[in-house]
Image 1 (cartoon, rainbow, N blue to C red):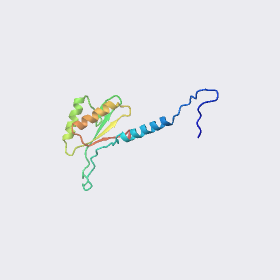
Image 2: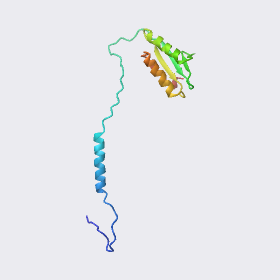
Image 3: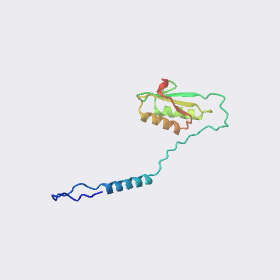
Amino acid sequence: MGMSVGSADGDVMIEMNTTPLIDVLLVLIVMLIITIPVQTHAVKLDMPRPNATPPTTQPEVIDLVVDFDGTLLWNNQPVPNGDTLISYFVEAAAKDPQPELHLRPNKLAKYDVVAKVLATAQRKGIKNIGIVGNEEM
């Protein structure tokens, strides 16, 4: 490999040697990859026991619909306010066996409303919650 120092005219060569720059960038990338902690996403699931006997009776099903404007329907009956919804959750959580809550959010419903309903249900002791998609509607 030959090295070019300049031309016969005495012009200065303005090409930069990028090999050391690339070497430094590769080392930095390797260091970054090594130092980033491995991201592990764990979802805690309560799986049924393999030796558990299936239930003999089907639990009660509660349909809770969240409409596009935030209106809540508890088994096709409108819920007037949040306190009434909380009392419904407390009443359902006290039953034995606990009923299943099937949440049916409208595809245009705000995420905030659906998240608050789910959080309230969980906070009040509802354990069997399922989200029913729009493909059945």
